[in-house]
Amino acid sequence: MELQQLDLDASPGQTERAKWLLSSPDPPSLWHELRSSIRETVLPQQRKKKSPTQGHVLFLQGLFPILKWGRSYSATKFKKDLMAGLTLASLCIPQSIGYANLAKLDPQYGLYTSVVPPLIYALMGSSREIAIGPVAVVSLLLSAMTQKVVDPSVDPVAYRSLVFTITFFTGAFQAVFGIFRLGFLVDFLSHAAIVGFMGGAAIVIGLQQLKGLLGLSNFTTKTDVVSVMEAVVKALHHSWYPLNFVLGCSFLIFILITRFVGTRNKKLFWLPAMAPLFSVILSTLTVYLTKADKHGIKIVKHFKGGLNPSSVHQLKFGGPHVGEAAKIGSICALIALTEAIAVGRSFASIKGYHLDGNKEMVAMGFMNIVGSLTSCYAATGSFSRTAVNFSAGCETVVSNIVMAITVLVSLLLFTRLLYYTPFAILASIILSALPGLIDLNEAYNIWKVDKLDFIVCLGAFFGVLFGSVEIGLLIAVSISFAKIIVDSIKPSTQVLGKLPGTDIFCDILQFPAATQIPGILIVSISSGTLCFANASFIRERILKRVFNENETNEITKGVRVLILDMSNVMNIDTSGIYSLQELHKKLISGGTKVRLLYLL
Figure 1 (tube, one colour):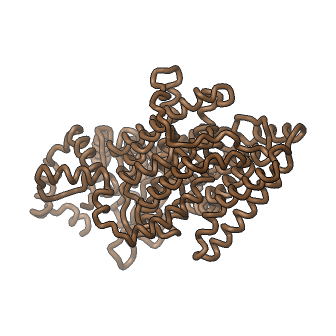
Figure 2 (figure 1 turned 180 degrees about the vertical axis):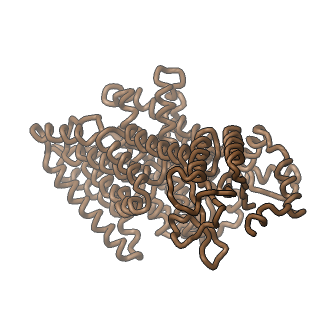
Figure 3 (figure 1 turned 120 degrees about the vertical axis):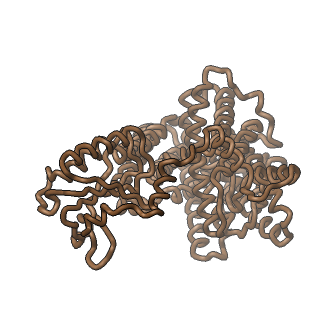
């Protein structure tokens, strides 16, 4: 009776549906999709037709969201943003100086990067909580890859010029990704790869801080663990100054204690935010009053203040290193976007609003392009500073504007006071921010959920740790691509059976209670694409099922009807169609009917 039901004539509704499926309209052209992509990036979706004037207003509001929400901005919100911005600046100033040192740049360039990019993002960005500025991972990435092209100790001017050029390319790639809606490229760095990369980078950054913490003059430019430890051992046999270690560790312990207190008592959120700035001020006064710099304490010394100078003349697009600059810029663009979008979306979900990733890419891109023209290096969203901004009660990106103005005032008035700032305190500030980059709980969750993803995580971690930043990223991306290729070439096929007392059909291996219908074999294809890469494999797997070449189950012998569940298949190319035709011919010649099942 069930076989007869399968052979019943199709109902009028099914016939009409088949007609639409077989004679569907042509899809939109590539040019139409490209034009729509750009329009959706800068314009909100509007169903009603607008006048040209209204269209221009909508365009400007899409490009500069501040024009939309700024009309309803109130004094109450400004009070909260003012408090959050000042709190943010107290953390941003010492961190920016430390990250500039990590990027092998003079301290003022870290502060420059905390002025212009936040202001540009405030105009174009849509996240309310994200704090823009230099971050540890991007600073490490820049120094690790750029110093292989130009040595900063030999030619600091050429090194600085190359960093600005890389920043320009970073912004250009980010803007292109957003305009053409290429955000999926960021997804090539899977969550597991990012967890492993961040953990490895945190350890590498921590090891790099041993130079400042121990007061070493000569240190390796390599970033792998073996080279760094060899350099430390060699340096310890020569001249090093224990006072640097004592000073740095004392303030590191102080910062970590304030962070612990702030975590336990949410009302004291300002305490860990103010601790780094307080440490810089106190350590600088201590060195100045005790003349500790004459007793081995390494200090910053040269610190140029003032407004951001123009760096347009330092961009080199015709030099011998422009190819390397573009390559490094593309890598920095991906890493910076991954971190910024992850940070922005996590806090947006807490506040209950949606963050458009493509618009964020455009905003990040333009802020880095403008930053490269004003002596800034690559900036992105910082998780630690964003958490402080959120805890301080920020309402909008005006907190970034307040922070940028505060940093600018510091550049104009207080940079001379930082002449005696010890490198050890900058190292301790960076070290205090590193525990947030190592997520052991998430690594354990990845292990529990997917062992292959955990291998990706370990590959990125050990690649960064024992190789370099590029090797770690290459290993992670390679393993991720290998996983995608294997899943595409060899997708799984399941034999379905009916659960007793229900109309539900499930995999008989996962649900042993499911029973097959005598004479009918139902096979489900798990792949979303039936293409040249997997069509032959799927066809052979199905033929083996039908002819029972690798199974001894009596039920599947003498299959009279094969039902292919194609509900998961979203795309079929010519190779897939040819494989289905071959499968149909072979089964028909053996007396087995074939039916395709689609759930629409």
